[in-house]
Length: 124
Image 1 (cartoon, one colour):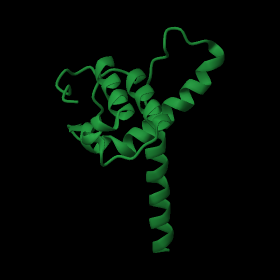
Image 2 (cartoon, one colour):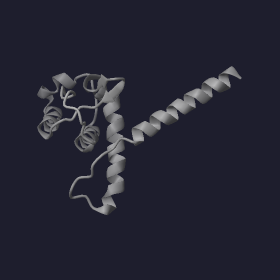
Image 3 (tube, rainbow, N blue to C red):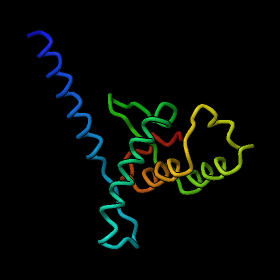
Image 4 (tube, rainbow, N blue to C red):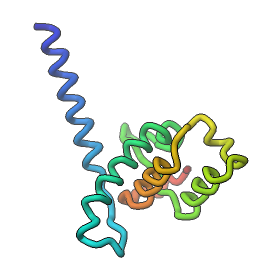
């Protein structure tokens, strides 16, 4: 009986966490067509997962027990692409081994996630 309760609790926690991940709000690019919105949403969700796996440890802040993902500017996101494209510039990212495709998904996620209301989390 004890194990059933533990397994049930774990399943409930996992379901809540999955729902929270899937509820991340985003804005569509201005020029996206209706036909491409579903694919965009899939890529956004993958970027969110990849961000949590590879980037959140260094970039996500905890404020009032809430995870705050920083709002990166476009030049900051492009800087990551440049560092990835030129191995000499990858030193700060050495711990993270991601593919170019994964980096593109992370950048898509960060670029189109809903912006934070607070200006206190600008320490990307």
